[in-house]
Image 1 (cartoon, helix red, strand yellow):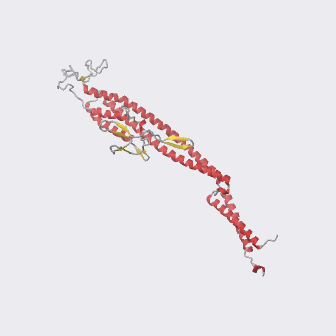
Image 2: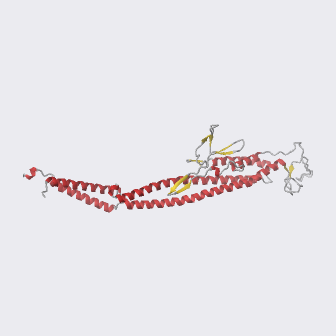
Image 3: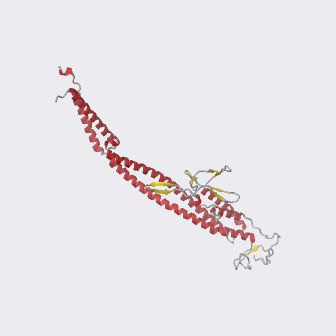
Length: 365
């Protein structure tokens, strides 16, 4: 078969183009560190790379969701701890105020402390993180009362009646943190304060504040009569107006039986106040125990979050290793292949330089 000049030139150009493409591919591999830059270069390996990259995107979203959940859970657990401390302080204050040795002046002095505890409790219940109210459920932003136009936080308190109202809902935010795995991020405020319960923590602190501020009426019948104490031993000889209690109550009916050397005179109104406060001690402790249980629940979530963080980190390392194996390139081998391809290309150019310039004039020499 006769080989023409045109055939030689066409073959040379085809080979040069293939060598140039090969050099470009190897150059991309060296510069990017990836063996596959297009799926068409290796469909099987390309499919593996796409699968791993897709899993990596899911992993990235799971980590974002986990961080968001972690922010909610840790903030909620810390705030429940603050509420626990507030209730403990309120209990201790109630114990002090209901002590038989506490005077009316002592209780009045404790009243501002109870009022401050109530203020701090409402602030804790309405805590607002960057993502919104901690205890608002799905209602993370301030609501507007359609009737009055007032701005409503997660909880609102009637300053006249002491009634607390929950303005959030029972919504629980769930976050996907793994394949078919979700975590609860928040805790609805209805689980912390049941506004339909007359003995909820806000109502108890309101009652404590009110009881401490209630004045003692020392002359129950208003006739100005005073119990006599002729020997000045601190024991009433008689109770003219029947408005004084003493500490001897043999049948536990809250009615004095007889004075003794340890008796303490106490007007009926003062005894009623002390009894009001005594009742609050156990109720406050019950509320504190409920909050401790909720805090323990959030603590369990923290443990799960830490375990999930470790798991996702391990998965991320494995995916990076798998991706490297699927599309990674051996740098030393890639550089050597690129050098050989460039050498071959340059040699082909030199050969072509001797073939392509030949014209009719060259044959007539």
